[in-house]
Image 1: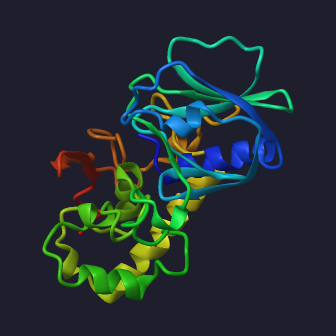
Image 2: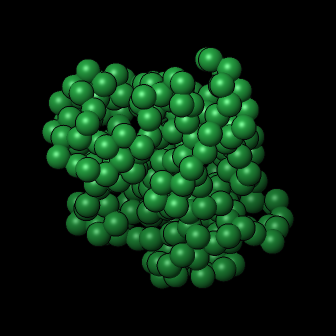
Length: 269
């Protein structure tokens, strides 16, 4: 599933092509995504793009009148193409621009979403979200206060988007490994020093992934069609049975909240 770095990489990739340019019309080949494609998107004509933003794992395309909200779901990606390029089986939505480019949405599993809002401040899918992990609002004191009374394991605590957005499974695993914290530790048991170190590592891991275009494991591709290269930097995620790069012991895996969780018993406590 595309996580925050993949969505941010996509945002940065499409922004220069979209801002200041006009959507002439849209093509919706399949409106049956996770939720039906918003009817406003079917009838977009002659609307200029004001900005391209991101909130959590949502792409936010600001138009003259309203916002397109895109979630990539499990397997979605967006690409910048020429409008002459023929659509393939899983290419569900095109935005055709007056400058000759097409923003194309591809989603084999169709778990993504294309939504619409006239008022971003009162949008139901965004209203419950916690702070951005790369913002100053997400800091050691904030996370300590949110975690200190929680008996759940620290990993699902980090993946709760009411606490902090965008720290998905890959990056929760990697951040906990970098912090030498077992993912099964009760959130309340972490010391202030451990929390401080964890916040630093979450920010570093996410920033590093963004700079490398995100992580491509199967379906994700950047807006230019290239994969994300952070997969080559993974220390723990998907490494079950392989030697830990720090100590040589074999990496183990369990399920926490039905999500694959990887750890080194020697390095993480």
